[in-house]
Image 1 (cartoon, rainbow, N blue to C red):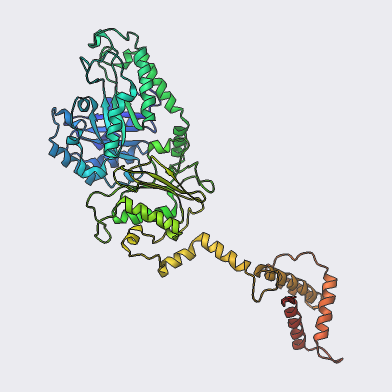
Image 2 (tube, one colour; image 1 turned 90 degrees about the vertical axis):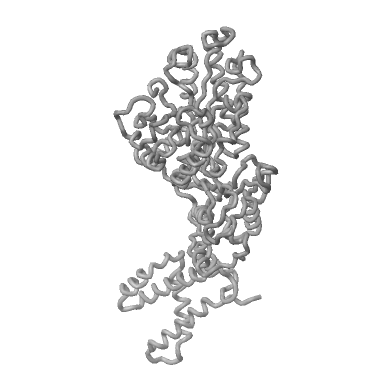
Length: 576
């Protein structure tokens, strides 16, 4: 298959009843056919199904991370359970199987990274002829489901033979069931299998409509384009040795050419190449510090919070804040290798905080608190560039994009089902969010008064420290000559001291020692000055300050006179 379709970005792998889910499949070079995972194309997404209930999901996932970290994994718990054929579970067994999936890999770091996605998969023909997908929906483990996948094959309700329609179905209608499933579950969707036989008498159809396969090839292209427009996250085409009439694309050159064209199109996609180049760099990723601090606070309470995006985010053009190479940084350019975004997922019904044992606030309450705090200028969320959220539950009301780029503005958004947070550039290493806890603020346990630890963390923030040091040098006011700042006074003093030191060196019996002392101070070079004139001025004022008489000048009198002169030079100018 890799030879027939070079550059494939998705591969489908199936472990049937009794085959388990062996971690050795990732490294065993003696395997042949569809389970030879060592030969997966570089950088692809592999869609893996299994049928056995008690397999070790964690061992399989860990073997994947060790052997092929360059590929992403979509793991389907019990492929097509509704078929009720050999080895298929009862609904109760299916639910228990999903609990095992959640217990073993639901909290795996690869899932938080978006590299591991957990999926359900049903045949759409079964649903379109009246099957109730809710029978096989693990609602008790809904938080562990990342994707709803379907296996698409021809079925036209109302046709004389719904499995053998008279024409290729219009793509938007063909995909409506998947779009509806995604909306009903609040999950992303994709196609784990898709294919259409040519409409020929040899395939059981009423007429030879498409003897060359050109109509079917055109339908492939249209379906693929429409699926991407409707949000499809993965597309795996069905391919198996079943003969020309039954779907083997090696015997269907027109359809094979269309599929190869689509694969080449994706392989040359700018977004995909950008992701592959990042992978070649070692996949550097670090979440900006304030987003990381908030993520850890919310995860500590029990929320599911994602940061780096999945394949669709990483290959988007332009790449946005869930990627480590965002092109949408504001107010400056995003740093390569840094992520700027979080997705906060809704808590399960009845979920309680791991911190205080109280019920977890809904996303509506969390979003309202974040918005209110950002508008009020609360320090812990001042790094927020924009947020997408729904004030009402269950997609039942508006979804808002609240932004500060640079001033506050609100507009509609379609980014539903979670709270999306994106951060401002310039805060990459800021500790401004240390200790900020929106859950505690909702409960009234945080009145935004800083603890000593939080205040110390704020002072240690590089951005805050920079501004504090700058403020000291910009000070003007009492004790500073009119028209000058602290830095100006210091600069003037240093210049005069350097000039005075040169006078002292000229009169000293050890001028090199005096100049060495001045050099050790590492003073800035003085501004150009008429040394002779300045020396004469200083000498005149020093002599005037010495005791009257013709006797020798005592050292203490000279020191006192020099101090008097320096003090007068630094004194404030008279006020008019």
